[in-house]
Amino acid sequence: MIINLNAVKWRVLIGCFLSYMFDAFDILVLILSLPAIKETMQITTTQAGLMVTATLLGIGVSSLVMGGLADTLGRHKALLLSLATFGVLTMAIAGATDWKQIMVLRFLAGLGLGGVWGTVAAQVNEAWPAHQRARATAFVLSSFSVGSGLAAVLAACLLNIYGWRVLFVISGALVLIPIVYVWMRVPESTVWLAERKVSRDLLAPRPSTTIKSLFTGDLLRKTLLGTTASALALTAYWGAMTWLPTFLVQEHGLEPSTMAGFIAVMNVGTFIGYNLFGWLADRIGKRRTIIGSLIGCGLMLPIYTFATNKTALLLLGPAFAFFIAFVGLFGSYFAELYPTHLRASGAGFCFNVGRGISAFAPLLWGSVAVSVGFSISIGFCGALFLLAAVVIALLPQDVDLHLAYQNLEGVSPTGEAI
Image (cartoon, rainbow, N blue to C red; front, side, top):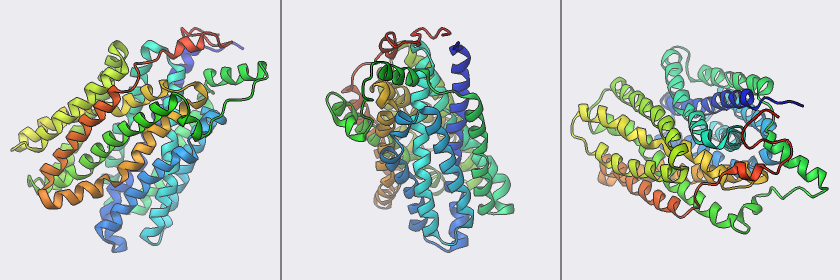
């Protein structure tokens, strides 16, 4: 069978971009709906925050529940299952009668949301040649800022008129877009298929794809360090991003509409940063670029929070957000730390367990802010970014996966048609 890998890589890029875009869309819809949900259900701020925490915890647990599916069933089936899971459960929230039901549904939806990241990271790495892999993965994961922006536009247009329940119905229904595209246009990974074919031809047992496998041999150190780096960086990220809107309103007196504009400008900086850092990673290496991204976040965040006027905040906001590119680079780098049969589960475990741990960041830094103020509380997150950079420096240099593919029958290390 002749497969045009050049055409396939672009279809994978589009399918994974759409999938992660609606992953972000779903996460932001809840955050944007929280004020309306609080008013409708007469719940406290803490109860509303627990719904966000439940989502992030579900994403963390997804590494244990969904992580191995992409390595056992294949990238294609796992991605479709993850999309369908959070799409259906998001629509179900519209029928919830109390906040506890929403919290449970958000936790379960988090399983699907987390499953998307690991699968996307693995499939893009296996579809694109080594010299383009970082920028391809970064581009796909930059869709998070696009999904966030679309969610904000939809909420602005519909929330006040139709209410939050309609917003969740539409959000869940829109997941049909990536489902249909992935189902019809994105094939199974040729690398994953080749690895399975080699095992069959040699009559060898399939390598273990259990979570326990991530903690054996030299993978133990990679998994522990990768998860630690993610936990530190994402705790800093969610701690800062959760409270930046409140910081702008309470400590700088911005109107909510003006604050929303400031946040929108920050998303532009994020999108540009993802793609420029992705290009840079293919030139100088992923690990070096991630370290630079984290150091940039660690230095720029305190500078931003101690800005004294609105013009400085407007300009420094996208400058800080530009360095958040580490989130996109984690996808290509973590995937290269693991062999084919553990790639999706390994990369997903490092990132999603880190996201699960970061679920407590809003509560942690919110409590700190009560004592010292939001400027200092958010500024502390800069230290965590710098610490995450130190942990990444302890991990191995980039690995050229294509060297490992050269002996796999039917797979071209240069990306030529086979």
